[in-house]
Length: 146
Image (cartoon, rainbow, N blue to C red):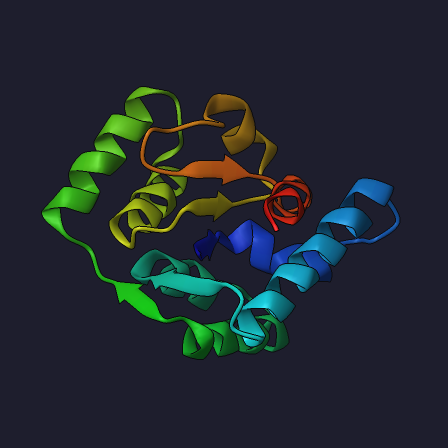
């Protein structure tokens, strides 16, 4: 099963961990990364992840996140199909960068798009081509499938 983590998801461990929901999302995200490392999940990566990560002003965070590109089994650059899907997703209310992430994940044939961005989760939790989940909900779902 291939998953795509957006930039918010990759950055979750660097957020203030004083709220329980943030700690739970961090633990779930770290658990997902362990499943990627062990080969139980595969990771999709995109040019938009590179772009957003390179704009991170914190070099340590940027370097830690960039290491995950090497763990990815697939990579996608911008295509006309991705831009067309992005336009469809912005029409249902997603911001353009968020829509690009989802469009890239679909292009990579990921089964899941994982995010901690509440705006994305409120606007689009189901899509015909991909399931969009918070990392905690993904863990719950994936453990019931095992």
